[in-house]
Length: 161
Image 1 (cartoon, rainbow, N blue to C red):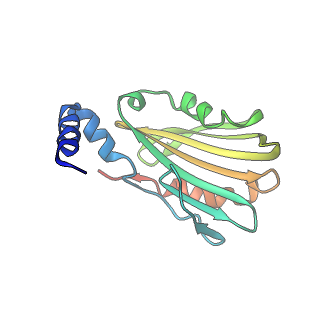
Image 2: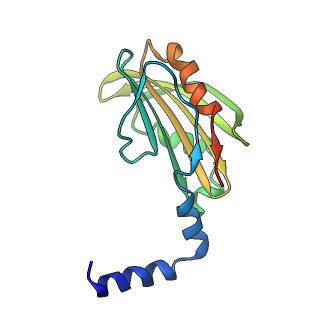
Image 3: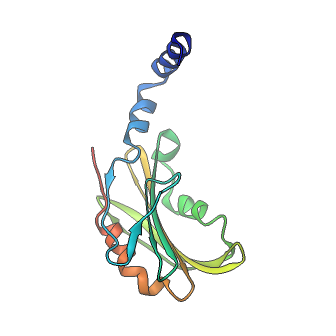
């Protein structure tokens, strides 16, 4: 990067509100539990963490988003956004419960992803400036079998400050 471009980047970052800079620094800074045997870590793409269970054909991923937009958003609304790509979605369960130090929402949904019948477990919790998402994507007959693994990830959640 040449000096002029570097100066522009420094200026832009310096002009951003301190709250935005602080919020961005929090993304990905949290602990989670391990899903256990059968799960292998995979490249998370745009998420923070991801695992794949080859025998079950299932995925667990976690992600964090921080900033003004997320600090006061309702967890129920954010959970709905997570299943927007699920065709013919029906909600099977909704539980409001503790996830780490805060109350969050846990849901299950049944629908189709790219025409394939799937079940999703989604959990969302807000903590200060951040929203944390936890998603289990499994073939229809596998979600209940893998639920304890998903709960292990949730139970280990701890936002690090």
